[in-house]
Amino acid sequence: MTVVGAVDCGTNSIRLLVARSDDSGRLVDLHREMRVVRLGQGVDATGRFAAEAIERTRVALADYVEILLSLGADRVRMVATSATRDAANRDEFFEMTSALLGRVVPGAVAEVITGDEEARLSFRGAVGELDPASGPFVVTDLGGGSTEVVVGDGDGVRAAFSADIGCVRLTERCLPSDPPTDDEVTAARQFARRRLDEAFAAVPVDGARTWVGVAGTMTTLAAVGAGLTEYDPDAIHLSRISLDDLDVVCRRLVAMTRAERAALGPMHPGRVDVIGGGSLVTMELADELRRRAGITELVVSEHDILDGIALGILPGPTSDS
Image (cartoon, rainbow, N blue to C red; front, side, top):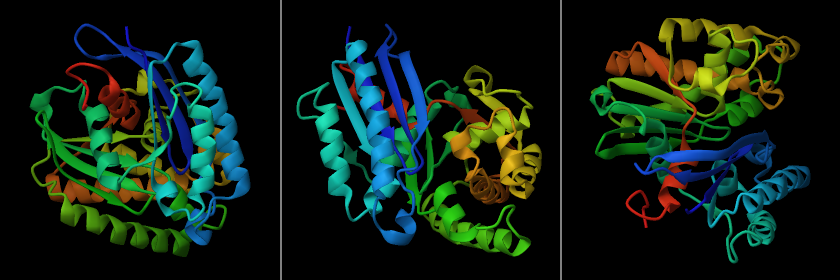
């Protein structure tokens, strides 16, 4: 039995999946974990990783390595996305990851992947459990620094685009007040709309039938919308929320103070500062998908780029290699 480890290091969080495959080629989770390390802290403004952000990431990755070793991982792949593509001092990050990952698989190192590959991995992980008859699918992966928009069906990806807009980037650039002012919200939505216009120009969504949202902003919005008192991934996975209800949740979160958001049961402490920005990006996505494709609800998946990474390094027919 081959055990694989997938690590996704984004702008806001670092996540781990350790898994094996069953007889049908589906992933069987052995361990799944997320930590908010805010690696992209200030990168949009300075172009560099902050020393404390690299240290937070190192501590989390060191713990993940111990988990990978304890579960007997044979293969490991770590991908780094938006913030790492943008940082001038990314060599410091790579030296740190190489030293740690090499304890699991000699020579292993984090890879900076393109926005296009990020989108394709997210799509593969997100739609694996959905009925192909529900396609074509539009998958959106709303991260800290970028948002991937992908269209595809059971045969794979048709088109993909990575837009330079995410919950951390939008919050740092446009939303300094607590709560944001009306002028800040208007400016943030305009900025998000401009960035997403590029994505929708590149990715034709007019024939899509099902919208699938992945990553922490989407899952948190679904949890708040469902009225959960604490976060429950099993309850969230493949849950559905109408776009009308989604709009109510997003507007509510944007209008809240930081303290009010922190008091919500399913809210991860690391998302309190940026969930307003993520809500505004989500509102723009929803408006465009309703207008362009007539979509009226969002399906939220707990499976995303991590699952795509893991599937790609499993031996046999599920692998990309």
